[in-house]
Image 1 (cartoon, rainbow, N blue to C red):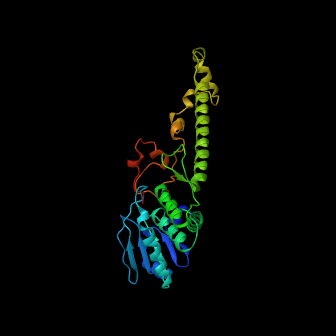
Image 2: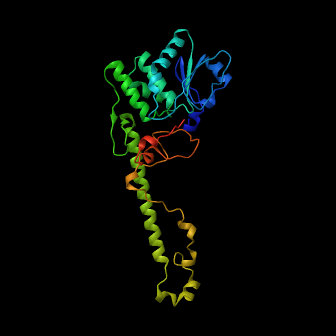
Image 3: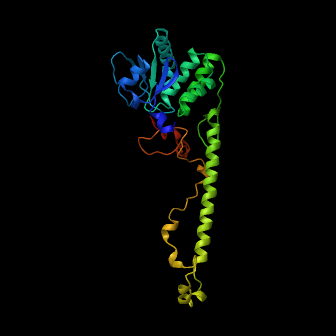
Length: 281
């Protein structure tokens, strides 16, 4: 299933826990999955009350400095309580990527005896689009240390980011670096081809004297009139070395955007990163 398709699904984490975005909350789907409790982890979405379904509202922004950890135990214990009564819980934010995914991961750590690393990969296997923001990762690392005395995920400093990122995201960074290197190589090749074509098509003063004769010969590739500006209007732009990881794929917010925004690494270029983070979902 495509990434877009997954956003429109209620993902089953286990036999009593589900994860989704807000747009899929439909009475028929909830009845089909026998969901009796919903955790709404947003500031944007109101509770959509359905008969036979209870709600918990967690007002939290998807922002690295938002204190989601204040609700870790409250949500995890409630999911466990519903499970013990034979019920099923759905946790959602706007896209089912950051806030709700973090809360589900914490539940698995506390009540299903998983490590943070295990819980992350377990949830990602059920919903591949999850990507908790790096502030939530720091809070989850601290939570695991509090429960177990150590953490299975390390927060790493990188040249690309002003804030530490979890080591589970390092593969994403490597892929981004490779992608940007390929883009730069393609841009250089396109620029070289453009310059070569432009040079070969330009007529020298000595050649211009016999231009009428050349016009009758119709040699392909030698007529300056055959070169249209539109042929070169799509030449790739060289990215700045200081922002070598800019990409449409964002580690911070990979879900469909409600408004255009830059990727994680481009917002780190600001001299004051605390004020450049935004609420994604």
